[in-house]
Structures are given as C-alpha cells and as structure tokens.
Image (cartoon, rainbow, N blue to C red; front, side, top):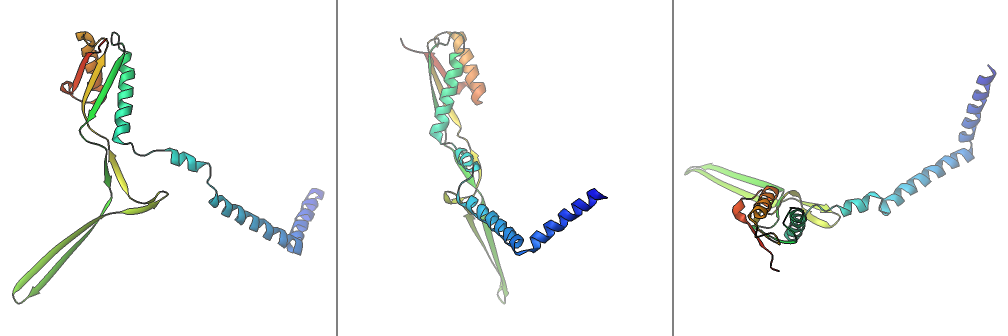
Length: 188
C-alpha cells in the first residue's frame, strides 16, 4: 500500500502545481511556444519543398529529342560492329497538353402563340488553379511527342547485319516502323 500512497501523493502534487498560478502560467507559456513554432514552420520551407520543386512534370520537345538521341546513341554503340555513332530524331509534333475544362450549357425554351422557340448556348473554359508559380490551367494529361523518323550514322553502317540490328533496335525502342529508320556509314 505504501507504493500506492507515493504515487497518489505525486498525483496530488502535480495537480496542485497545475492549479497554482505558476502552473497555469507554465501551461499557457508552453501552449504559446507551440503555436509560435507552428506559425514559424509555415514561414520557412520544409525539407519536402525542394524535392517537390525538383520534380519536373513536363518535358519540352527539345528535351525529349535530346534524351532520346543520347539513349539511342549509348545503346547503338554497344551493338557489335556499330562503333562510333551519331543519332538524329525528328518529331511529327511537340508535347501536347490537355487541360481540364468546364462547360456551361444553357437551353432557353419558350412557347408562345407562334409556336416553340428553342435556343441552345454552350460556353467552355479551362479550369484555372492557384499554384506556387501563379495561376495556371489544371493539367489533366501530357501527350509525349510522336517520333517521325530516326537517322543513325555509324562506323559499321555499311554492313547489312549491323544495319538490321540497329534498325531492329530503334523500331523496337520507339515503336515505329522500319520505314522511318535510316542507317548509314559514318564518313572517315
């Protein structure tokens, strides 16, 4: 029973402290410090902010071409007999953005002595949202460019076996027909 009375006395002591003026002031001070810390955390960017800014949701057509050419060059160089190579990718179209749209459809119907009168009106607008970079349209999807053709110039480009391997690689990687791929020899 002694252990119980010790914890009971401790509880009474804590309650007495919080009921006293010092205890109330301590609780209020801790609460104010907590609110101040929360307020300050909204003023300074947290660790997650730079990561979000570092993520890039879209890529320009030039960036798409550059990355594709670089990746294809690296892969083609690894084909036996290809040697040094240069790759050029052309596009049918650039990156296309599809934005969320809002439609207002108005239908006016009147019926008078001369008969029925109907008038339909339709208004469409892009939904605008506030972002870190200002007001922007709400992006639904981004359609990547379509590859029109690929030219590969490499040291082994005059060998029909190497040409076939490269053409097969490019058509598979980019999902295009072999008519859109040209492989030729690099001049010395």
